[in-house]
Length: 336
Ligand code: NAI
Ligand code: ISE
Image 1 (tube, rainbow, N blue to C red):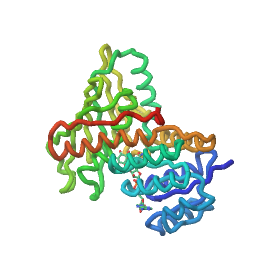
Image 2: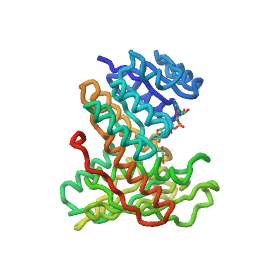
Image 3: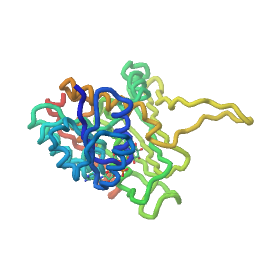
Image 4: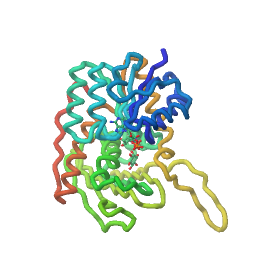
């Protein structure tokens, strides 16, 4: 059976996911799309040569009988309502990060999914599907560097648009680290703090950039994450794990090393689309395969909630400058 997908949001990542489901991955077909920009949705259908209907809004698309599963790739603040509607319709849903923009919103999704009785939600946290992060986790889990004591991480984007505000460094950008580092360490956060170094002249007037986020886990591992979204030079993701007897680093994406004009150089990628291209393919193929097999897996609504609880604490910490506790409730057995 070919899985019939409906896509809500035909912006940057929506178009990317539609393209990969239609041209790269196996087992699915995009049969319905929508966007508040209906012209754009129609253009995407025509440019990609899809045999898909354009719906006036996301809720009508979710209800459409021939739509068997959803991809929610619209703006973050719209995710919660669409995911809740998908659960109410009993349809599996892949939702881009963030699952919802607040922990409260994520909790409502968790409760709705538990009430439904089986998993329907996969969150678009793609880093656990990245081969580099998987290799790093394998080293940590093997015990070769002993217990992880400290992590030094960086999440750098070349630049962001005028609509990117100071809190989005947390809800839109750091949220990836909040998820992947929990997964990497199999640990949860207990406190956070946010520091603001001198702001770059390349940030617009309302954005404080860069930021340093300090996280402490339940086992006492200390993590610093530099979030710098106007670094100019590239899209650069770094993660170094300092263990008791060694250090493990996230591998650089494979790029040709060039010796030319008396210089040894390696290109740095400029775009998240290229940096995690394989991981996006693998996460979505996993969703398609999971739905077809009747078993949605991967990053769960609980993972989306856990990241959002830490993100909420980071937003408070941005405002207060204080160390803010993170209190994650006990994980329900449903998500064991
Ligand atoms: P975008 O701004 O390019 O596209 C978002 C689209 O959603 C726009 O076309 C907009 O008109 C549409 N939209 C907004 N509200 C809507 C609604 N109520 N109903 C239907 N359409 C609506 O943004 P982008 O970069 O594609 O991001 C979309 C989501 O994907 C965000 O949540 C973002 O955080 C996430 N994302 C995830 C990435 C990842 O690495 N996993 C990378 C980039 C984005
Ligand atoms: C964007 O939405 C993403 O998810 C990218 O992976 C991240 O690097 C960027 O900062 C976000 O704005």
